[in-house]
Image (cartoon, rainbow, N blue to C red):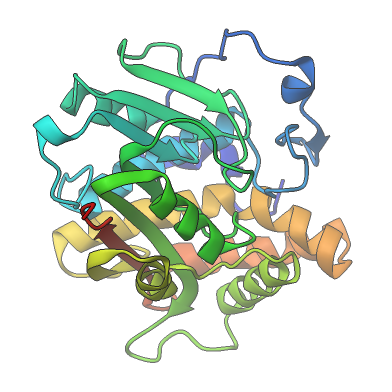
Length: 324
């Protein structure tokens, strides 16, 4: 636990957030090795392909992911997808890195006649799902097998993928002719348009160290701006790209952006220790005490609106050419 005024796991309550929920454990038949989760610093992590992804998979993280999903839906004005899908042309949908499965469930309601498959490293998805939803334990960077899809969707996989061009190519090769693939992802570099965020801030140091650790592990923390080129190289056509500036903190004057910034700060602080402590101690060789001291300063700094930080979120989608 850091030295912030409140523990990280009460942040959502402190901000009167009603989005925390309990995620039911998956009750299907899976190998025991998949659910024999390792723990570090009081947090639970993935067992399948251990070390592939450095984020936790415990209840607190699942709640944060659902909270993040709500944030992104608000950010994109309620849109579950941006690709121009037609009901009659969508029969199979894949949600890459489904997490809690919340997007898969919502898209299944929107396309009730389509089969929706969500895959992830851990079977942590809710069991209350529509009949057209199925979850699978899988590593998306392993060889792809099975039938093709009409729509493949992936969001916030920054820091989780070793070979992005290969992943994008796999989505192309596993989408039916005329189908669509959509990526929504981050460039996790903190920025400020007015120069209020500087290298002297603890938050800037934390962000730079996080990105350094991610790159040392071979996991790109800023795939968002590169996605259009990767999709072009893979063979997609009709590529569309939208960059959305996402505030961090309650500093914006616009009420909508203030709410988005508030939510973004909550999720960032809630995930601060879970992601960075493991990286700082395991990759940089810091002591736990050194890392926690930095996190405490980051927490205080963000909550005081000491700067006007932004993070870029990229929505990119493209189409597989029609068969000739």
